[in-house]
Image (cartoon, rainbow, N blue to C red; front, top):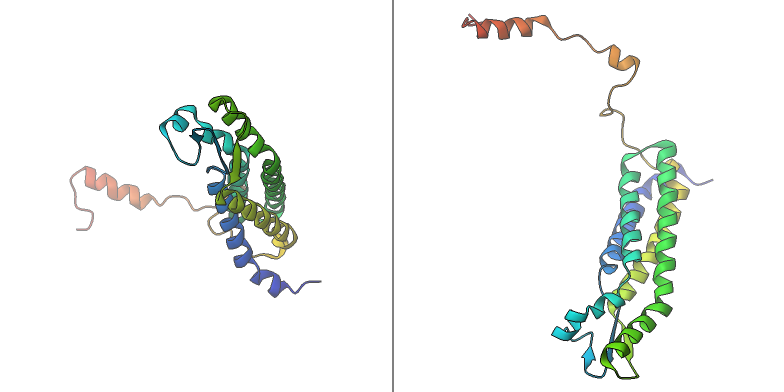
Length: 200
């Protein structure tokens, strides 16, 4: 069985790495992963023709970006919840991270072909060349680290420190036991309304 103190010490590094990797994948998911060239059309050049045809969109993966944002949101919820809810959200984050990694890896085979088809259709030339941008590698690293950190979270979340109950909303018997509002405060306000100085 793992040492509880050691498990508690993993909280900060795992959460920070999880937030950073999900953030990296979320940013990379909004960038172009594949660029290409066919005839006079070059998606990496940023020409007016390319912009008008929105070929860069073919080289992006909105699904990966959305899943990365979901994983990022799960990390935020893990920070502020306790008990079973916290473990359930960590599991949900793991599912999202696995989906992110699968979507990123799948785009390795699909995105270049989609962009090449769009380029050949636009340019009228029968051949097109495509290449991955550094953003694809960033998304791949972010997805892999997201899976590793969410697996660690699922395993260790039960032994991690939790937020205290000090600021929870009162519920049930505790709410009923709250002291009634003192009547002297009301008397002071009435005196002020009548023009009397309550401190005299």
